[in-house]
Length: 601
Ligand code: F6R
Image (cartoon, rainbow, N blue to C red; front, side):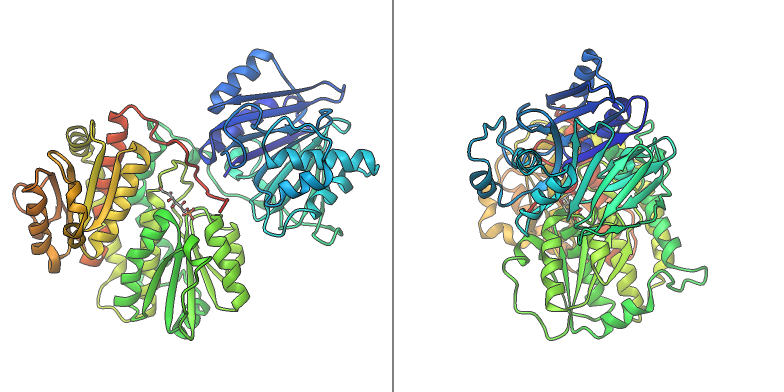
């Protein structure tokens, strides 16, 4: 969840590192720090609590510089948010500095066993790691590489790490290691870099070497040496990443979230173009995926958060179009409470980042049981895509705002296309997706309407509800998550029929209740439920589809195939969440306590 960058072999690493951290800030933003070293032996450590901007101001005020350096933006796991707990963490004599993404499960045992006399400056597991390197280097006279490898060999098998270490006695060398945490080495003819996300280093290079779990690498100004898990030298060729750096910029938008909401029409078109040929036949899904799924008697969709909500919608496509019973599970629950499986299960992992630790845990378990797996993710080359048997891209482009928007709709579309490819469906899905794209565009063009709804209904509220039935209930969960995670208004998404079984007691005078109404079969029932809460004082705001609309509905959605309506119904909810958050004066892109990619369990 934290962000890591390192640079060596440049005139001054500081601007690269700070720009990198700014790009990575969406991954964690409790505190940030940088360590810089020079061939003449001078070095600098600057750490600040809060946003990267505080670190930038302090580093510039102190005038620090270095031809190599490492930097980190933190999402706290061990130890509260403080300068002491910020990374880089240093060994007691400040010879070694380490930044770390992940969790060392047995750090307390290691501390007790090896570091009894050492005084610790922080409460972090990372400090234990760097003190261990120091101890092994000094007491056992190991080279830095061997001390680093020895420290790693002591970590509990469940530990996840991306490490970037510097030894002040070798100020041009970055020591790198990873397990279950993404790290890439960026190579160029004007210095080399290390990063947990390629987007952070694109202004230095677009050529990256992917590290594998268990690798240790030494990155120097003109060379990269990699040692595999068995300690033997390996050569890994760089790949060229085709990302336009502009894709990771906000451009003229005030927030990434708004840009990403607006991009959804384009993403729908991109997916239709990628997965269908001109004749409307599916081309982007290899036969092996379809053949394997067809042998399954049940699909299990595994995901977390917004991706889980996308899975709840996808289930309907697999059941209605492909005729395969489908279950959707929260990854963190499934990992430790696996239900009784069918005889021939097939697992689909849904993820924006492809790095979510909860989902990775399930994938590991399922692989051990020998069942076939597919990951549908936005970040290809991520752990979940690499480790599953099959992978399909979501092609939403970099999603930077912590609140996921375009990855949700894109995941729904990819599931729809996959389900469509497995069955015989009357619908022309390619054409229908073109219509979806046009209508998403039309809805996003009506921002003023959603701003007015958000400001009048939510500005001063402490709680709210989204209700719906069937597919609308699935969208209600996502709509509620979007609103609560960024505006901090406690919002529940509810299957409307359940309200009267208890939760309706929370309805007070003026409580906002958003009703989603796009499914003909249950439209009358929802109308009844809206009346029930209105009779108890709720401020009801109904978002309906055209053929089901009534004159006093707050917003009427254009119509596409009913099963695809979630793709439209979620857009007002995203925009309402955005404008409610703005109205409350909060940071839309970086809600408190959250991070974009949840790489710890
Ligand atoms: C909410 C959000 C999260 C993620 C969840 C899973 O807006 O983005 O709920 O959906 O953390 O992450 P991924 O999809 O990367 O596996």
